[in-house]
Image 1: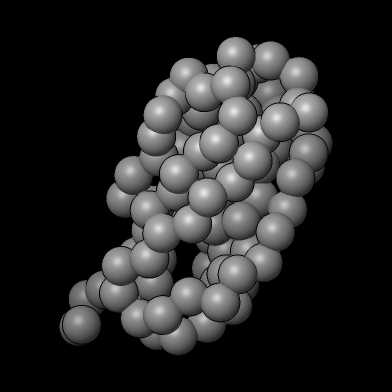
Image 2 (image 1 turned 120 degrees about the vertical axis):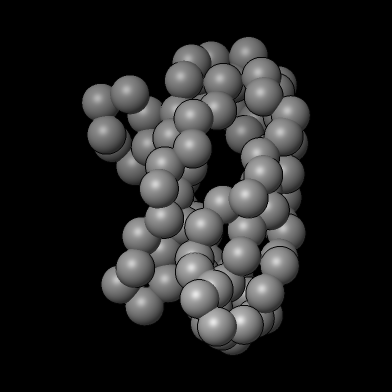
Length: 89
């Protein structure tokens, strides 16, 4: 759609102990990198998925990560979304 942009539209549940659901919008079909960083900015998880134009959703497992606050960003073709904070129990 015109004026569409890359961005996370929903993340739940937060706090979570295991699975995190991520909803996001993509401007076009593209490979999307989903990155989870800790409070120091260090990447603790990164995964790539194929996204379609418009609304998408995916699930990340946070099992094995220490409890704490993390930031989720998505990247497509060099464009990085605004970070969204999540809490891992």
